[in-house]
Structure formats: C-alpha cells, structure tokens
Image (cartoon, rainbow, N blue to C red; front, side, top):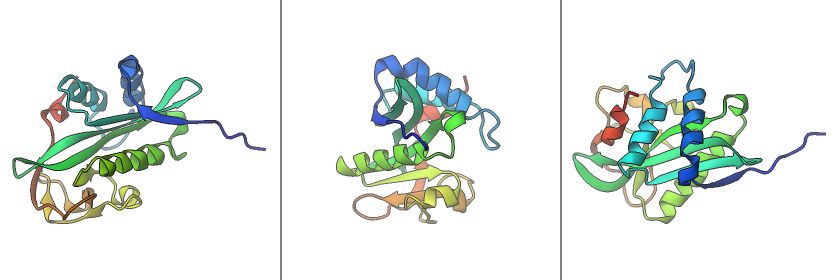
Length: 172
C-alpha cells in the first residue's frame, strides 16, 4: 500500500531563502536549456522586491518545491501581467505533481488578486496543461513563438513585446 504524505503550499518566509536557493540550484543541474542561473534569478528578484508571489511546497518540514511570479512589462508598460518562473522541485520528486500543484495554486492566487495575465517561457506541452497558449500577439525577443506562451487571467490578451524584470539577467 502506498502512503500519501501531506504537502503544504504556502508563501515563502525569510527563513526559507537558503533552502529555496539550494533547491533551485539542485533542480536545474543537467537541465538542457538551463543557464544554471535560476537560483541567482530568484535571489535577484527577491532583493529587488520583485517577487510578486513566491510559494513553497513543504513536506515533513522540508522545502520540496518553489514557484515564483514577477511582474513583466508589455511594450514598456505595467499592464498587470506577470511572468511565471523559475519553478523548482527537488530532483528526487520531479515528475510527481509538485510543480503542477505549485503552478496551479500560484495562478489561482494571481487571478484572485486581479492579475490580467501570465507569460511563461518553456515547453508548450507542459505549460499547455495549465491553459497557456502560444499566441503571436505577445513576443519575447527572438524566442521561438511556440515556447513563449501566455494565459489570460482577467480582461483581454495583451499585445506587444514582453520584458522581464532585470533580475532575470542575474548570473551568480
């Protein structure tokens, strides 16, 4: 018989910072399209007070997953849209639903707080499960359109060029 263990999803606290960095660094080791800077990105967003929503998944007192959402600009303006990511799950628990639960909870919380939409850069098959779609009305540099996706949470689809927070340029 399989035992189901309780997992709690909650906002990060200052005490979680080191565990989130360790988890994020470990989660992206060997990932094909990773620059290995995801931990630095989360730290930079936090330092700039640009983590609009930062949730952790906790099990047995340990952080096993993390998701962050930060504001994005569209055509240089704040339009109530956010970027999803990075999403990190403990390597031993990846592909077990932790990341999906974090993303769903985060999107629900953004929508409840009046967010207009969310964008993500990633695998269309994975993020499509949450309602993200490639839409050429929103662009992100020279990224292939299929991998840059959007989800309307309130209002209408925005159009134009998306700019992520400068924290995404973090390298250490």
